[in-house]
Image (tube, rainbow, N blue to C red; front, top):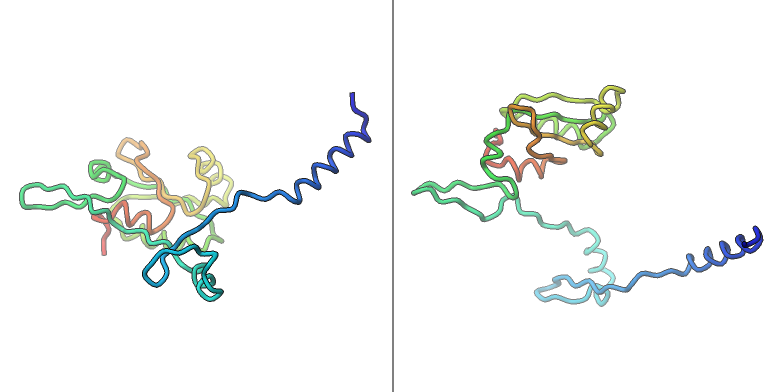
Length: 168
């Protein structure tokens, strides 16, 4: 059995080791002026520009279903049959959330019945916990039996999923 002093020395040694831990170095390649090159070899200005780049996420996949002469575009990841079964939604929000008001405005333009739940209230927080909601805004879309079809956490996600149903 170790003494308290031996355990404290071992802990101190482990804390020292922890200060020098490094991960495995990785090479990141990105396109610059027409070709791919390691980011670590870029000049200071290009590396700074790279920090502010945003990942391109296409709104729609190129997946199409041909029905005679009609072409029906399908939102990525969710079958059209699921989208057609949407009966309503539950929108979870916080008063201090900067992303919540735009999502609320987006939802008000949809042709679905919905309800809003303020997770800052005790009842709202309880419902969020029961539904497994971990962030605001969160929108749970349900069918007419109340069964969850899918969740979305931003306007971009809802746009991808509901592209053909958005009221402009």
